[in-house]
Image (cartoon, rainbow, N blue to C red; front, side):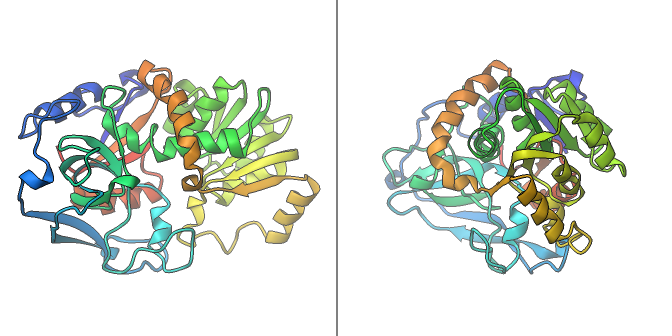
Length: 387
């Protein structure tokens, strides 16, 4: 896998290609139609006819416990022409995110599960090949719900254009996409973090946590991260601005957290659950706030049996007068504009750091996804589908 971002080689990032900006330039320059970076000369739908065989990763079977490669299958199918209000996208970058594990199960959730035999759900960044909407032209870069597919038909009301002059287009799936939006909403609207408060962030170097820590520091908060391993903890402090970062694998995590939070914890940004939650909850101050964004430690059912008993957790919430709120970022789309207006210029100027782990080729998406669930990614997990 490749590691990309704007943190620079001094952060220990391994580059097997060009830095981000030049990678994106090469991506554009090497396109077979010689695409330029902005509005591209290209044929609209009515001027073109084509036959495209799309490659898709489908859900072959529902997992029992932790998912395996046997739960996925690569298929090929013909893509139809886009109807009115739709575009045909050639996927360049595919986003892999922990929430996808829940979509593999049949249990009721905030979104419908992926059907067995259906294409795995995901967001992607791609190039418009054909458009049946006058607002989009062939050659535009867009982000939308492509699924795990090399090509996709997407409704234009569900996608937005991406400007490659602001940042590499892959960032529309990470720091300037759903994970970044989630980080911003969770810290500002759900936690309502204030200067001088202490916030603990689990999965501190992940796609969400890495931005939460940086934004918290800019707001004058004391940021305590929890991540997996020495390298990630060092990165959290040296590049992301965390005041301290603890290894969740440390058997003495609870004692370590107590030592670095002598005045308790005001806010907890929850991405993990598991032992990290058990360590944080007793440290919460009266009237503390918890934003429940994810619980990756429990997605496959592991560790649920020996988790903190519910009565003990419930009592802590009661006696500490805690406010615990789960949230799904898709219910906060009215906040996308303010998020992009604040964070976009900071990414462009290099004041906000981000990091990407890149798997090459759609066929390697299942393996990369399994690695993500085990914490093998560093920053945002992406798949490069096209060039």
